[in-house]
Image 1: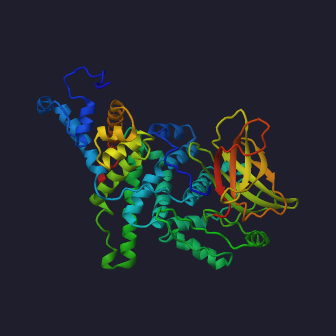
Image 2: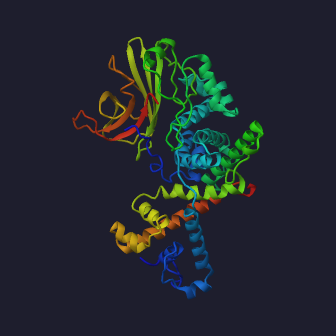
Image 3: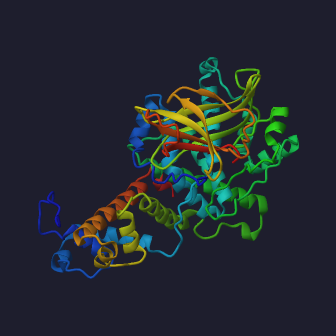
Length: 197
Length: 286
């Protein structure tokens, strides 16, 4: 009863960059920004948590990212890149800031960021989390089918037997879901400032 | 259904077979065509990249920020919007916000520590900040207050801000003091959010509920206080879907027990019990 509502599934992809820009132009930025937060804060938080190694720090970083996004919201151009790509770019910058702070504060060798916390090492983390985030939104049964196919490496025949679904249905879900994951990955990599990596 | 009818060239590889091949299944893929078709090769390679990314060993837990994070952001951006557009000030801003503290906290190197220090220095209440113990990455900066929190807080006029960012709040009614509040978070399937505030007034305690994003309904919405496990509940009354509603609290209700503010969608069916359809919820003691 007191469990946190799972916000991953109740905000689907309605929050496109273009919608957000349109809402800003119409002076309805506050509500649109909250939608953006609901949709994308788990991804930002997850990336921050992997990069900083701590949920508490990830909360703080998520706050910094969305404050930064709010302050620069009028410079966001949907024609130049996707909204999640833009947020990920901001996330990477705030993570780099945070590591710079840590290094300055402690000046000890072990305050250097580990692999995967910054720069190119973070790319793989972002890739995996972007897809995990999308995978969590597939709904059922596509989500279950894809977990069995990707993680348990079952064939489509085995999945059809396991879930008692027609073979054609399973194949069709696999094709559509895999394409959707690919589209999400491509959209995230289509981001403004991508060249500044 | 095995071929995309939009394709103009039916000799390309079956997209379902390409997807299965990308997953590493043994397929009857047209290897002869694949060997000469750049498009099908690129298609397969990009799908294989997705499969490779998902199957890498690293954990890929998706974690959500604590509810207090949005509260802090929301408070910050509304404060900045107020500065940007001071004309709106005349509309009346309910919360008097210590903007300097927030600004310092956001720009500071240890914002949470700063807030903790500030709160401790005032001697109002301790804030044991830190992970909640589970590994979900969710952090609740403000934990449960001590038992006589309501009376004690009321006596000194302290606000127990869920986000730890509202240092002091006074409603527009000088006779009322906010003694507890919570953000209302949507339950799965809904997007409604809001804030519930418990106030003491000269005429008794009341809950003020601000809601937004409630779906249009032929029925109405009702405010409840629940125990944490949902084993008991008290109806506070019906609310409109847009405006701010203030509902009296039953005198003597134990808010440390009835701590969950719940908004339900109700029908005009004459049934006074909870419809079991909750759209938003918040914990007054979180």
